[in-house]
Length: 232
Image (cartoon, rainbow, N blue to C red; front, side):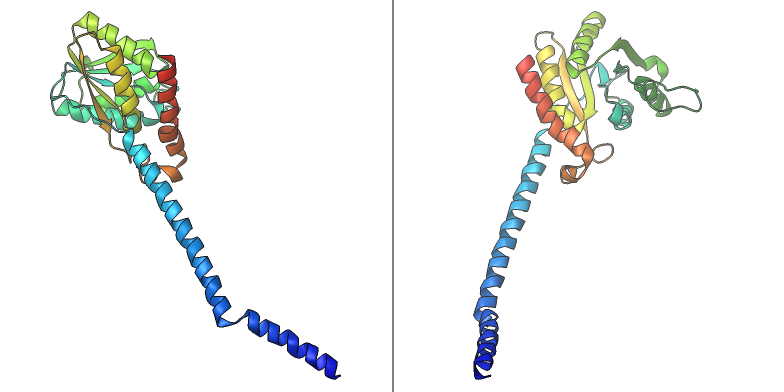
């Protein structure tokens, strides 16, 4: 009986020692250190992601150009056409050129078909007040920004254009400007670029990490830039 009592006292004594204030304090300190490391790592990751997104956004302004060019982009065609229409109303250029990626959009009840995105862009421009005779659609199908640049250089040369103002989405702007300048380098044509501010059809730099579109519009852009450097 005495032996069992001593054993019980030893057990509860050990439990009391394990829960002593000094041990609990050490556990709280360790948990606090882990929390600080996790918060610091998360903040650093967010800052790096924010910086990576911002690094893709560039502008090369032209007060006036011979033409505004809307680059194809099915998922962002609306924000690009709205920006181009705004620039046109500001009299930044007398005409708007559209490239054609030959991709179809959703079903149009009015037209009873799936119109091409370039057709949707043209319709948006007309609704925004751009006269039809000041809209030029380049019918040749393009599949890359490089294709667009080559097509635009040919059109500019044949039609005597000396400057173009390219409109595209924010995260596409650095690659677009790089490709356009490479393509037009010895043409005598000045290329400017207007990037649509993110937030409408594309996530903002602060939020792209948590948006599935962000991984294609931000992360995907770095892959495409690397591919362009390697191929061209």
